[in-house]
Length: 355
Image (cartoon, rainbow, N blue to C red; front, side):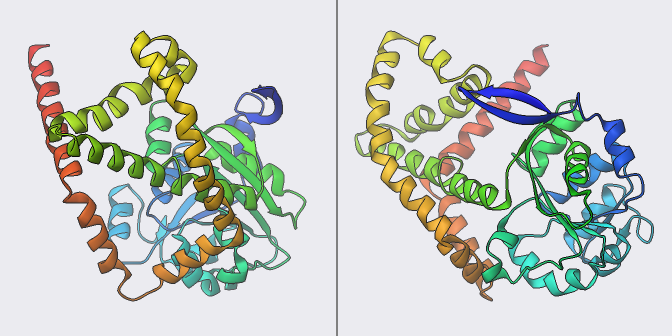
């Protein structure tokens, strides 16, 4: 394993150079990998493993949109595509890639298929970490492992097809066979990871839930709404408010920060922008630190898991969710965004016509 220094801290990282695909294939040569669930992570992981040469089958509810999607992706009913029950029966590595709510509902079914020596695989630590609420408690005679790609299944697949890889966390929760570690690393390579960073189930879910509710989605959406509202209230047009709040962020700044870092961004903008950003970043940091600490405490206490389980299990949750999403979708902010994206597409089409 490689030792890589991250900001002055040495961490152990598994790379594809030291654990090549050929080694991963050898470790899992006798395994049947059953991907249960074909929604968010399932397609990307299953297709990447299939393309990499692993023995993969998919388990999904028949006559569902995800079943139809699996058929379109080339999974063959009765050969590589089965009901959840049959796939779990056939699989020696059961990849539980259902939603958190789905994992709770289907746990008795999957648990019955976990015969001694099998492996239970997750891409999220939710079910295991909060098992006092989920009741997901694996038998003691199976391996329990996790590979969590740091991005959507769509991104995992897109980068794989392009010849790259998405970084992933990995963890071993239970090693019943003495081979759980090499299995989890092999799975990480198989699903198309670039680098593999070791963690544990609890840290993975704590950081994941904090990130989703914080910078990745919740905080980002909230601060976008706040700045847009301020600009509109101060007399700016919808297009100007959107372009200064969202368009420049997503189309210019974020890609550059991802490629070069925030320090580079500060060094390569106007003095006016540079001075203002450096003067104000501390105020935003101090304003949001209490909120983020409150958020982390809520995650660690299990309150966020409790709310997720309770809300996700109510009979009318889907309709209530659609009402919430419609409110976002129909807002002036995101209606303006839809128009700006259309203009962006038309501009790209004109470029293609001229080229």
